[in-house]
Amino acid sequence: MSDASRAAAALDGGLCGSCGFSRTVESAKGSRFYMCRLSETEPSFPKYPPLPVLRCRGYKPARDEGGGVERR
Image 1: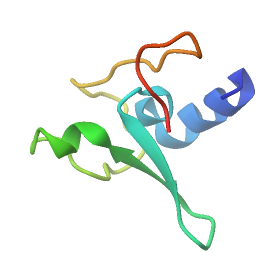
Image 2: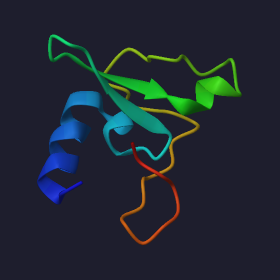
Image 3: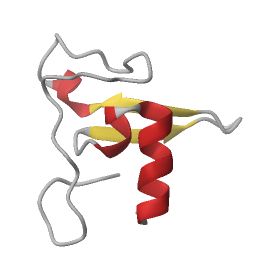
Image 4: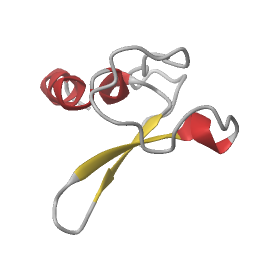
Protein backbone atom coordinates (compact mmCIF):
# COMPACT_ATOMS: atom_id res chain seq x y z
CA MET A 1 0.00 0.00 0.00
CA SER A 2 1.42 3.38 -0.96
CA ASP A 3 1.86 6.21 1.54
CA ALA A 4 -0.99 8.15 -0.12
CA SER A 5 -3.31 5.12 0.05
CA ARG A 6 -2.39 4.51 3.69
CA ALA A 7 -3.06 8.18 4.55
CA ALA A 8 -6.48 8.09 2.84
CA ALA A 9 -7.39 4.86 4.63
CA ALA A 10 -6.36 6.34 7.99
CA LEU A 11 -8.65 9.32 7.40
CA ASP A 12 -11.60 7.08 6.52
CA GLY A 13 -11.25 4.53 9.28
CA GLY A 14 -9.14 6.24 11.88
CA LEU A 15 -6.77 3.75 13.49
CA CYS A 16 -8.26 0.86 11.51
CA GLY A 17 -6.87 2.34 8.32
CA SER A 18 -3.30 1.73 9.47
CA CYS A 19 -3.72 -1.23 11.84
CA GLY A 20 -2.10 -4.56 11.09
CA PHE A 21 -5.10 -6.40 12.53
CA SER A 22 -7.64 -4.80 10.20
CA ARG A 23 -8.73 -6.20 6.89
CA THR A 24 -10.38 -3.99 4.29
CA VAL A 25 -13.60 -5.46 2.89
CA GLU A 26 -15.31 -3.86 -0.12
CA SER A 27 -18.93 -4.53 -1.01
CA ALA A 28 -20.17 -5.03 -4.56
CA LYS A 29 -21.52 -1.46 -4.41
CA GLY A 30 -18.10 -0.03 -3.52
CA SER A 31 -18.60 0.57 0.21
CA ARG A 32 -15.50 -0.05 2.32
CA PHE A 33 -15.54 -1.68 5.75
CA TYR A 34 -12.74 -2.52 8.16
CA MET A 35 -12.92 -5.97 9.71
CA CYS A 36 -11.00 -6.39 12.96
CA ARG A 37 -9.20 -9.74 12.91
CA LEU A 38 -8.74 -9.53 16.70
CA SER A 39 -12.49 -10.22 16.92
CA GLU A 40 -11.80 -13.78 15.76
CA THR A 41 -10.06 -14.64 19.03
CA GLU A 42 -11.17 -11.90 21.43
CA PRO A 43 -14.93 -11.28 21.74
CA SER A 44 -14.44 -7.80 23.23
CA PHE A 45 -13.33 -6.50 19.82
CA PRO A 46 -16.21 -5.82 17.41
CA LYS A 47 -15.91 -7.53 14.02
CA TYR A 48 -16.82 -4.29 12.21
CA PRO A 49 -16.17 -1.37 14.57
CA PRO A 50 -18.00 1.95 14.10
CA LEU A 51 -15.71 4.36 12.26
CA PRO A 52 -13.61 6.32 12.73
CA VAL A 53 -11.82 4.44 15.49
CA LEU A 54 -9.80 6.97 17.49
CA ARG A 55 -8.66 4.75 20.38
CA CYS A 56 -8.11 0.99 20.48
CA ARG A 57 -6.22 -1.13 22.99
CA GLY A 58 -5.44 -3.70 20.27
CA TYR A 59 -3.99 -1.27 17.74
CA LYS A 60 -0.72 -2.34 16.17
CA PRO A 61 0.66 -0.41 13.19
CA ALA A 62 0.87 -2.39 9.96
CA ARG A 63 4.40 -3.02 8.76
CA ASP A 64 5.59 -2.41 5.24
CA GLU A 65 6.71 -5.08 2.80
CA GLY A 66 9.65 -6.08 5.01
CA GLY A 67 7.58 -8.62 6.96
CA GLY A 68 5.75 -8.60 10.26
CA VAL A 69 2.04 -7.90 10.51
CA GLU A 70 0.21 -8.91 7.35
CA ARG A 71 -2.17 -6.55 5.53
CA ARG A 72 -4.99 -7.80 3.31
